[in-house]
Length: 455
Image (cartoon, rainbow, N blue to C red; front, side):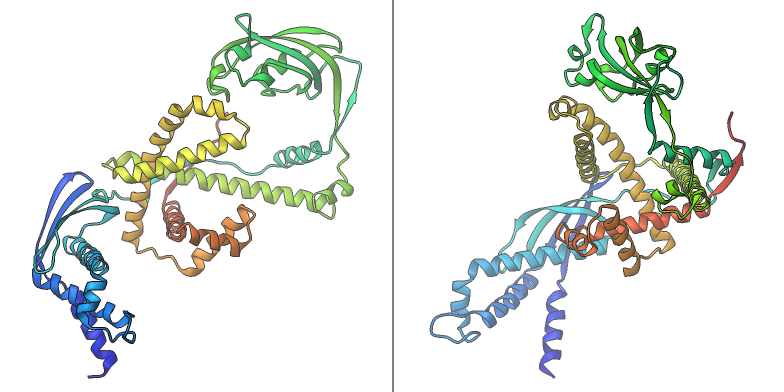
């Protein structure tokens, strides 16, 4: 037989480890204990095969590489041979046991070595978390409703006015404040006679400001604040009362009542630039007509995206409401850690003080843990649908996703791929593509009902 074929046959024979016994015990809905026993003959064969591999590479004094006697190699590399044999035997047999028992393991097993020596049966136990077991409901034709909407001329005009507003000028005027004006004010805020910083130490900007600009329109600054300044003139003093919303960004001020002493320093009229070709060119359009067409196209794309997002969320909610099953603890814990990291990073980027984040760490963890369970549950549902639909991800699919993420994060594609490989994120990228394909399938097969726009 040819040497290369002989090596291949020997390799295959070494991999066919015989099983003496495999037993499975269910510890919890998503946790199993595998007890595995391998016969002594298979253990010795693996030791011999690995010893030969070491002998081929060993370089001992007085011998050419690969020519050292077996007993000297065993003596020199005894510990290494034993470790490699154990790693191979347990690793190979563990994977084969999973295949034989049709167990879908999640994460790494907790291996307990019970017996491992030459000439003896190998006995080990593996505690492993498993994918949840559930029956998929009908996922095609799920109901969703959308308000009948289209982009109107009024929508386009409003959007263009927002673009004009980015180049607006502000002229000081000697009259009362009107809707759309800007008030330049000095203010101090209290709650129950105490500065707001006594309730929220980090809320210095909400406690006192000088020369602060507030646009007179609904929702500007603190809800209900700017409306109470309408009609005031420069030099006028006003008392403004507000109730901080229950979802206000500063948790310590949520639902609190506050009183502000406000001095109007200036009244400024907002003057929009003329809508002409010169303005259009500032936004990359040749003229007003092309700017208008571009704005309309953007609005239509936004509407299409929002409708798609709404349908997807509705069918996802429908599936989540139908399916409630136990989840692997490690998967939930890992997703919770990811969400906590994201929340802390987002708050840091928004300028929230580290001390405030530390104070709210319990709330942050609780919020992340609740969301993590839903996201992990959805991930298993999506994975099961992908398996049932035999959804595949090509290299081209993965590359398109990588290009989109690189562009989104403003990172060169080569650098993004390098970073992805460094943090073992390639599988995650493929899962994202699978997730997107499944959601696209659910959306395309949803039963969408158009409803009238609510008043």
